[in-house]
Image (tube, rainbow, N blue to C red; front, side):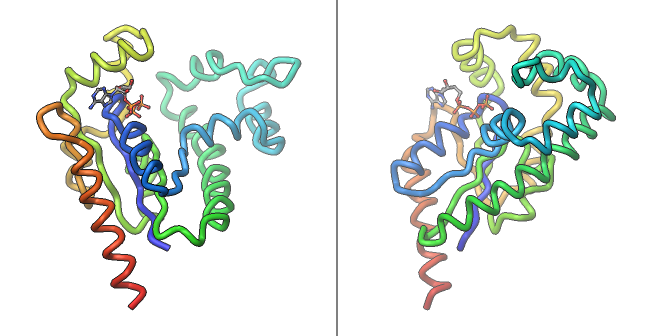
Length: 201
Ligand code: ATP
């Protein structure tokens, strides 16, 4: 089973790219969505979060108090590391379970905003980076989420720069409004299918 990791900075278009792969029939594991779900539903993780970050992290009806947790970890690297050390292994286990359900697919994709930062790319066979100019990313995120430019720039600073990620990525998709995205995705899909069939023969 060929495992492809897809990443890109905030607003680069990685989810958009994954939606196209989904239309081609490729199963996608959305790691960030899985992490959010797990934080809400995994009883062992909830217990660990409560122990580490205090009673206020969950409300009485069991809902995660996301803004409270964010306020603790936002500008505090050691608290963020603690949170990641709890969440990431749980997401990795969920990914392994999910993988076992998709053994008949030619290849699968894991979409993760922090694929390189969390080193989870090492668990993938190949990585794809979606690159998009900062100005387009800011514009798209403002339109999508209505958050301020300052907030977006702060979030960008917490991610590795594209320059660093380009060195680590096996493939690059340019979502820069001058190159058509879908033909690039179709070419990549073909490359992955060729790799799988070479491997099978
Ligand atoms: P995040 O890191 O915030 O999850 P992302 O990298 O997954 O973002 P998307 O959600 O795919 O990015 O794209 C951000 C926004 O920009 C979305 O509203 C999407 O529809 C839009 N968008 C992405 N690529 C294009 C494009 N080529 N043309 C027009 N709109 C686009």
